[in-house]
Length: 388
Ligand code: VNL
Image (cartoon, rainbow, N blue to C red; front, side, top):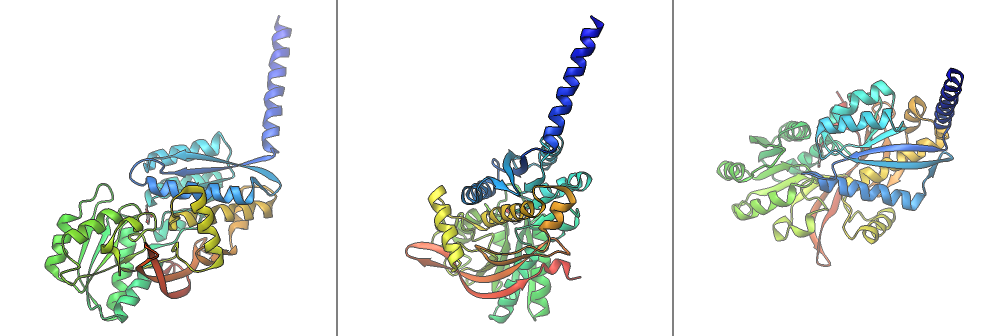
C-alpha cells in the first residue's frame, strides 16, 4: 500500500515535472493584454483590441518561430484590477510581455510587477510623460502629452492667439498638458489667464465653460482623455463660446477619430495637434484604415495605432530573441525603427519612449465626413518631458 502510494506520488511528480519542462520550452509564447473593455474608457479598449486583432490577422500568429497567443483581460479602468490581472498573467500564464494600459493610473499600478518579474510592459495608450520612468521594463508605443501640447502652444503663439484659458482633466496627462502648453505659450509671449480642471470620472463641463466665457480669452486650450471629446464639444457649442469669439484649440484627444464624425459643425475649424489622424495621407495609412474599417465598421483612432505598433514592437522583438522573454526581449524592443500608419517612428533606446512626428491639424469636412486634416508637422519629436 505504501509502496503503491509512493509510486503514484512519483508518477504524479514526474507528470508535473514533465508538464513544467514542456512549459519552459513551450512552442507557444503568450502576450497578456489588459484593457478597459467596459466602463468610461471602453472605447479605448475597443480600438486597441481591434488593432491587435488586425495585426494578428495580417501577420499571422507566429513570431520568433513560436506560436503567439494573445490573452485579453478587461480591467474596466480600475487600477487595483489591472495590477491583479497583471500578476495573474505573469505568475499563472507566464506571459512574455504585458501590454495595453488605457489610462495612466493603470500603467503606474502595474509598473512594479514588470520590474519584479523582468517582464517587458508595452504601454499602448497611457500618455503621461513619467510612465516610462516608473519601470526600466516599460516601453511606450502611444505618445506623450508634452509632445502634443508643446506643438499646439507653438502654433497658437504664431497665430494671433495672445490670451488663453486652459482646461484639462485633473490627473497625470492633464497636468502634463497644462504645464507644457502654458510654459511654451508664455515663453513665446502669450498669457494664460486661467487654468481650469475637470475630474477624470463623470466630468460636468457647464461650470468651467461659464468661467471660460467670463474670462473672454482669444482661445481655450483643452486636453481631455479619449472618449470625453464629444460631450465636451456639444456643451462648448450649446454655451455659445464660439459665437462669443473664443477659439477652441486642443490636443487631438478631443477631436478623436472615434467620435469626431458625430460631433457636427461645432468641431469644424478646431486646430489641434497629435501624432495620428485617420486622414494621414500616406500609402501605409490608407492600407491600414481600409483594412481596419473593413474588419470593424468603425474608424481607427490614435489609440488603435498604439495597439497596432505595440504588437509590431513585440513581434519584431520575439523574432530577434527567437521567442525568448525577459531582458533579451526588452533589449530587442529598444531602438526599433519602422513606418507606422502615423508616419516614421523610433523607440528611443535610452528612454524606451516613442519618438515621432507631431502634426498640426484642422477639422474639415471631406466627402461629407469630419476629419483632422494635417497642415503642418514637427518631425521626430522626442518627449519634451525627458529633455530635462
Ligand atoms: C490618457 C492620455 C488617456 C490620453 C487617454 O484616453 C488619452 C492617460 C483614455 O494617460 O490616461 O487620450
